[in-house]
Image 1 (spheres, rainbow, N blue to C red):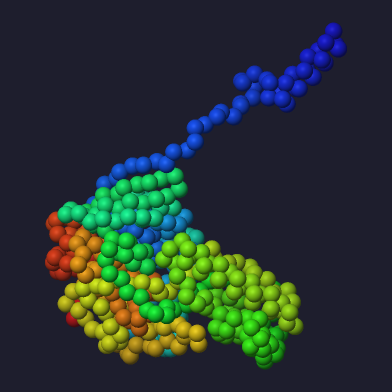
Image 2 (image 1 turned 135 degrees about the vertical axis):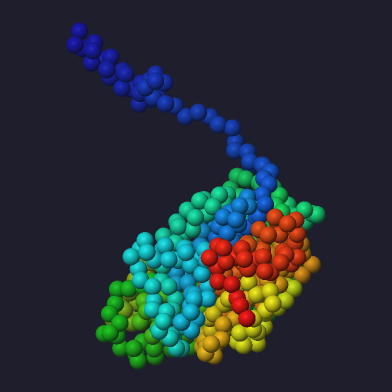
Length: 455
């Protein structure tokens, strides 16, 4: 009898191991049909394309103002340059002891600082030629999470991993086809805001865009360690580094200052020539180039005395990009406009940052004269020959030198809120953004905490 029980138990175990037991004891795989691309049609008041610095603020503003809003982002998180790009020190919000950019962007920055127990700089102290002392350090991942939370609270519909492939205009707005992971969506919107940074949506929509023959380099943000900077023979390091560049072992201009590289342990010190995030192909090239540059440099530095244990501690997923395309707008902001602090009749936000053009020799910022603060006109956010279309961020209509200052995060936040408020009013009134009242736009911006330019 005992033998029979043992045989029965063994038989049951064997059946389970072979998948022959009762379905109640073992769940079997179920054959599924091949995945079919999900196709749907959505309608919204305002569509924001690009969830970076400007796009996040634009979407929140639209949602808070009562418009149905969709935000399309081709990556996995919000924040752009501040998060995926790793430039987690947005600025500059204060100029000459006075706050010139506030509103939703500043709200988000303050919450990120508070929740991470960080401290704000003392904005009452002049920064002199060291403008970075007025930039605010934030926890990038925390910033991304807070941005997402605020979008959801504002009723914004977030669509990650999607990118527009076709944009056509009609009398009442735009129809945008996006492709994503297993999705194809037709989004019908009344107002469209391009916050891609590359004027990508504007270009697809058939609007004119501009680009320099040679663009500013990008930067892969990273952190290195495993050495004591104070014990390094920097004269030797700089000499050997220069020799490696001359031999072609290292690429000239990738790291224009090896002392800064080692002193800071990485950060914003690398140059990736021609970095372009406009398409998946160009973005792939930029990312590979940034990572290859870092690897090449790490391997070389580890051959030098005192740097044998140098290691990569952290690295961003993407190479951050400074310059690609800009729209051909109703007005082009010039360097002269910027450095003289011109206040336009249709000014909607401020911008304060030195002229900051990067090239193969590095960068030497040109500070603004005391008391000068630039403004951004609504016309520079509207492409020529367009209706119901705005941009915000570094792809605004501006010349190269003005753009080198306008492209920074705080300025893009101000633009994002202003463009969105203009889209809200245009949507409510059945108009195109260039037709709305600037006084009404200023009133709406002020109601949402923005600093409105005044003469």
